[in-house]
Amino acid sequence: MEKFKVSVKLHCLAKDVFTGWLTDKVHAEYTGGAKASCSPHEGGKFTAWDGYISGTNVEIFPHKKIIQKWRTSEFAADDEDSIVELFFTYKDDHTLVTITHTNLPDGTGEKYKKGWKEHYFVFMKKYFDSK
Image (cartoon, rainbow, N blue to C red; front, side, top):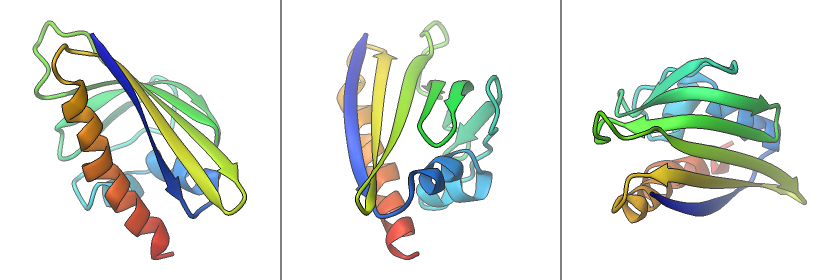
């Protein structure tokens, strides 16, 4: 199993990026417009990127941290869910969003690390820079 950590600095309040993560329309904008369905509740299901990503919210600590079971349609049926932990830290004039992604199938870590940067962080920066 593989794991990694990536971060992005966004010019917004932690509560804004946190709340957006759990909101269908805003989460879709975080990915450049791909359809998302998000539950704001622990135990709630979510999908993103037109169903490519799916999972369950494990724990939610308002405006601070979200833990999710996470997988893509590329995972084998017998692969365990991976775990995504999102941390939202506001300091000075920005929020640092840090994602720790663990329990990934062997050989996929670099691909998903690149995916977070190219398919989330780029669009999240545009979203908050335009506010």
